[in-house]
Length: 436
Length: 156
Image (tube, rainbow over all chains, first blue to last red):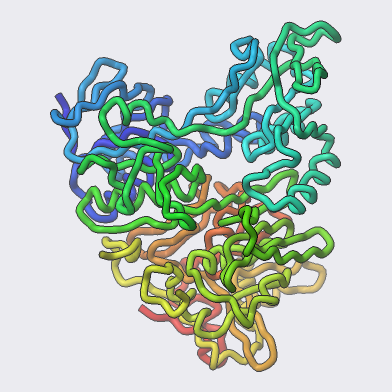
């Protein structure tokens, strides 16, 4: 039986961040990565470019081919971790192998949510979170001579990127969203409206406060599917894409006795309820920046960063991660859409929304007690990262607050002391910083 | 307990230091940077008549008596690298440089959202970002060499 100093379950950004975190501290200790999907890690957000045909599989690899040998990582790809034996420090995989570990990490990600509607197993109904999904959709459409119309359930990030890819393939797109707007969890309402204008101009048909209740065989126009909606309408379509979100994959952790509620519970060191076992990425419940509570915050940078911190701790260097906040960057039909932190005021008031709009650009900032909580910025996005740093710093934005709405906002708009702190990389509220 | 901070396994890391009090707002750093990153590496050729004005990776901002250059800090724990979805952004473990490969960049803007200094520039025309690469092949970066008042200096 092979045994490793570090065993990592998960070969996407969380797992790769962990490898890089370990190797920043420990150049020697043996590392193995178990990946459920075949091949080296790829840039998951770029599966939409695989779907559109803009990129090939090789072009979306997340790291160069030298990554695994250079970091002396044994990659076992295409097999799934089935069982963790905590007392024996073993992991059994689907290929019948058992491997030992001294430190273990679970970066097993999220699984797409598919509601329990009738016909959800029908051919032509897809989810869209893996490279294989993109390839299967392409193959399905190819067999249908390219297809004519798709219905996307969900107006979130995945749904929007898929919509763009389908438009690039010349398909009609109908987007069905339960909320009354797109990107509701990551944009303020007025920013959603701004983006919806862009989507409508690009030929995407939006159906709000609506959902899919069933999928039946098509009856008209040679379409294989008839997508039934809550309103009673039915949409003839070649394909239904279900993109309403992901849930953390906690089953393996739970079955092994690790605490998992909304995600596999980790402390700021990214260690689970069992010493020596760590977790990160979409599967892990990390500390929420605003509430302190544990929840998964399924965004790319959190997965990498959390993995990196986990890796350093696994290798014996004490680090803490406490930056869990929403951060989303998107370019859709060429339009930049960036948001971070809290974008919708919580019920109960006390939060102000500052808004600015110019031609081709808008920004909305949420402020409470003189501190920036979050923002949505569309169009002119050059200095959005400074605003994200201001959120993390917890700094009072007192006298320069009006400047934050300037489209050409830059470091120049902050007091000199702040600028110096940011240049030195001090923006973390728990570090000794004059910002906090 | 240390926060996510400096990394090990790096030698002497060279960085550009920004001295606000010395900046006279002449914008020469922008011109030298743009020329250095022009295929000709020549100021006159790069900015010659009839040519598309080249873009540099350094930008001077000014207001009243205050001016200074915005240029990548080459952070020890670079959030732009953590955020990059395509793998285009990378920190060189030997030199500490944060380097960007425009060939692998998909223009997703994640690095711009991550950079606490606003020094990664969005090149809408090319659909990729651009940032300081500390001028590979040069002993001293072009902006530092060209600054007439030591508002940009190189530190080890």
